[in-house]
Image (cartoon, rainbow, N blue to C red; front, top):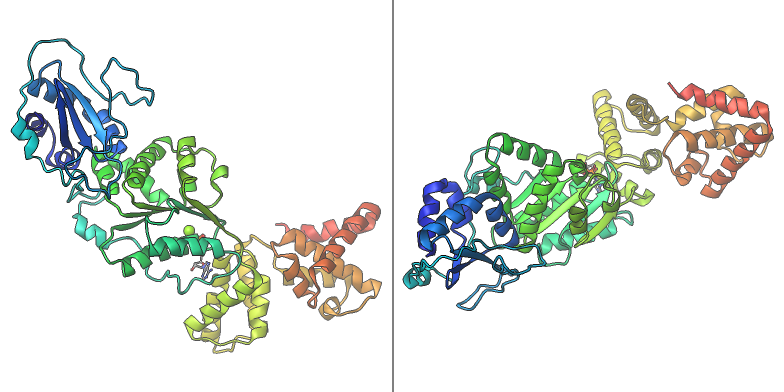
Amino acid sequence: VWENCLKVIRQHTSDQSFKTWFEPVMPYKLNGKKLIIQVPSQFFYEWLEDNYVELLRKALDYSIGPDGQLEYSIVVDRGDKVNNRPPQSQSVGTNNNSNNNSGNNNSYGNNSNNNTPKYQRNDYQRNNYNTPNQEPKQVKSPFELRDLNALQSDSFLNRSYSFDNFIEGDCNRLARAASFAVAEKPSVTSFNPLMIYGGVGLGKTHLVQAIGNFIKNNSLSEKFVLYVSSEKFTSQFINSIKNNSLQDFMSFYMQVDVLIIDDVQFLSGKEKTQETFFHIFNHLHQSGKQIVMTSDRPPRDLEGMEDRLLSRFKWGLTADLQSPDLETRIAIIQKKLQHEGVEIDFEVIEYLAHSIDSNVRELEGVMISLIAQASLTQKTIDLELAKRTLNHIVTESEKEVNIDTIIGVVTEHFQVRIADLKSKSRLRSIVIPRQVAMYLAKEMTNLSLKSIGYHFGGRDHSTVIHAIQTVNDLMDTDKEMNNTVHKLSQKFKK
Ligand code: ADP
Ligand code: MG
């Protein structure tokens, strides 16, 4: 019966679609006029229902007659080969008359008609039950028409991201450990999906690319690893709609063994793309494939994201990346220097680590620029060069005010020396400018209290808190002080 169905289907579909969507389907049983077919996943079932209802109806008409019915049986566990025993039927459809609460009323036809179906037992037996869920092969890429082998070797991974050059610290320990576990045993850990989130430049892309590289380098069996940014995924999806190749797009993604999708916050508000991703996600997950995602915020803060998708994100593990702590920043600088073959005094390293506080990408930018300047001007990297470079870069980015600039402006205004601010002096004429400078540093930069303290002669964070409170109080009670602080802070705002 199914063979007869396939005859009809083959006539009405492209080779590509036939291979992808109908070859993996196995006939399972014929109950009177009801044909039960076995499909590899829930997604498969939905796709057939959404895209091939009419064709299937036509095929049933031909092979059984107008009262022929169709039911789906979904293979649950892909790894589990079904050996001449009934498949685990998670969601075997019922006929049209019964009530199916799951909403998957996946059968056709209810006409009473006395046409007996042409039931050909041979056809039914000829199919090989040992491979009920074989993968469709040779699917074209949705974006460029290349063969799958070529694509599998092209995972869009950047080889320079590895676990070896990812510095571990308290700020990233869980995320790193989870990533490494997934890299060692993709799909085997319960971290599926693995979702890494954290602010800009904290190492999300680095970590997930390291997973991909590790799997490519260490897997015993060839794995199809794919890294894709959410932007790229979205534009591929849109193109596939334009080019009428959505099916190719879907089939392509369904064959990935390890899907790494970066910056999923970008999918916010893009309903259709999310829906498609949801289907791909489900299919891969059900097929025991690994999914890794990143986001710039925790799932609960992803606005414009469908609830059903968000709830999927929670199935696995969510781990965050925090801003690197001081020790980690120092280690990152040292690693970078080592990589570039450059040596500098620890004093300079400490200065840098205390001056760029939030973001590893910025830290790296400063290092690169510093190393470049030193080699161009043939100078050694000393504290002075570091300060000048930093000044230059931070004012250039115009995001933050540089702390040395603040100290410069404040000392000029109060007519004190920079060394005074950093000294132990308790003179009121020095304490006040020092406290104002600390206050402004807190207001105008992203530096931590600890790092602010460092720039004022190595004071601890409680001294900085005290300074900030004092200035706040003074501004409430002392009009002149209030004016001064406002005037000074205006100087930094363009
Ligand atoms: P994100 O994707 O979170 O915006 P990236 O992964 O692009 O951040 O990281 C920015 C830069 O900082 C990259 O060059 C990356 O190699 C580097 N980086 C981030 N965290 C670390 C770390 N813990 N150790 C070493 N390098 C890091
Ligand atoms: Mg990134």
